[in-house]
Image 1 (tube, rainbow, N blue to C red):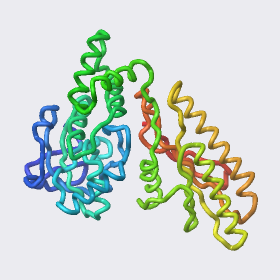
Image 2: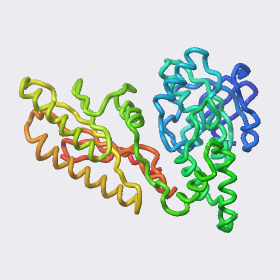
Image 3: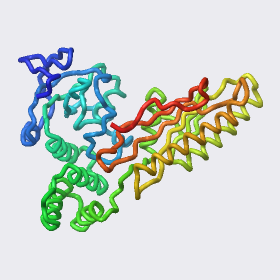
Image 4: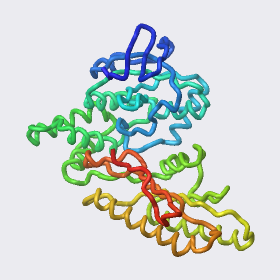
Length: 360
């Protein structure tokens, strides 16, 4: 068991904090699914949202991030019928935070509904393989949003990286993969299961993540007190440029036009701070090195734009204050990215300074 967690009769001690273990009778809890994956239920407790590592993507069984449509459905369901299924997770041994294995959308929905405390079910499940299988089983049944073909590729790739098929012949490996896909991905046809296998072992598996409009909206809202903003928004001294490399540059040009027109009409208008959040459309080759090169080039370009264009006067109309590179590397596993890479502008040094790295 995690050394940071002590389970007493009616109390769960996590780190330095004591939590009352609450009855979970009114909730649907699949004890068998937990125990069949070598897990142990430690207790139903209520925690602060700040004590949940909601951005930890290690145990996500889907390639995509927050689905805003699904989030809205979950929120309406909880609002109408109250919470029926507890989010399930483990305790991080370092931070003592609750790390969700299932229920990411439920947790976000409860936060939007202003829950003072978030009810969760804390379990112990030490083995990574057991957690992976549990997440596949727990996140796939209705009414949760079902897995798709890309999720299946991601799942099998993780199995490969963890050595699941080490020592097996090609035929035995293929048979085991097809069997696993039939278990967890019942909606995939036989031809699509074979396609998943081929994508993993014939090099067409996506090794980097790109972002949908919904996912970009979710990411940028984290910079704006959880309020959704559109790329190109200019308000209250802040502007946002969000998208892939090409669209981010286009939107930045549009922001320039708005800001400089405003400054021309009102010379006392405040300096606009621009946050740019982006990803790159890199899907093959040496993804890790390609992204490093693209990010380095972008930081250099934005540094030159600040120094040579925006910040030439003592009272600039605008400047780029923050660059956020979204996590993209999926494989190889050792280089997988799980958090933003953030560069902040240092006016005294006249350059961007790295604040946070995405590699864990």
